[in-house]
Image 1 (tube, helix red, strand yellow):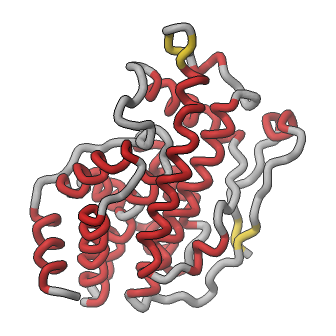
Image 2 (cartoon, one colour):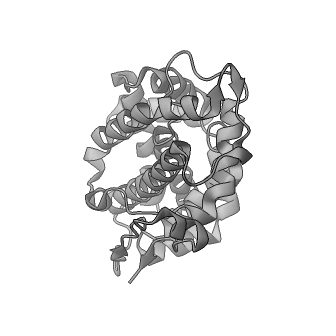
Length: 266
């Protein structure tokens, strides 16, 4: 690792924590639980044992990195400076893991879920204008209330085999896909100059489609990021699960009546 990256990583970790943003805590916790089904069992167990600490560390995301992401996400493009900061953040995690400070390293690794989760969130990619007040609240409430109906699919199977060096390009692609879905949220939850109550929507709404796709995208991206960094740190990759992709039923009314299971590992 270069001296510049070490210094940048140290600066990021030393600065005060950033406030929580994007996915509410309950949804972030659900994303983490579903993502653990797609990573090596040994890593999944370590992460599960430290879930409260992981979520707390995710809330304490470094302010400078959060600020860079806050600038880039609405623009739909990660700048070179932001990518360098993300690389430095990952380097800091790897340093701890390679020093065999396993508990601390696993917590920091787990907290990196904030990066792919935010990049997979169409709310944050809505553009500089954002949404009218109340739309974001109603969207997240709709997602939370729809979790039992969302069929979690393996969004991008090859992503689970990515090497660490390919993560920046993968993250950028996540953001671009999120940006393309952002307008659907606005059209579905803001009509005739008024915010739509999420309780008036159901699985037939285009907003449900966006919620379902973005949730699965975030789950896959979190697992891909964790696995790539764990592999780089030479973590245990034995018995890597073979995911069983869950695809939406062609008759969406069946999905609403009988929720599909979360992704399973053989």
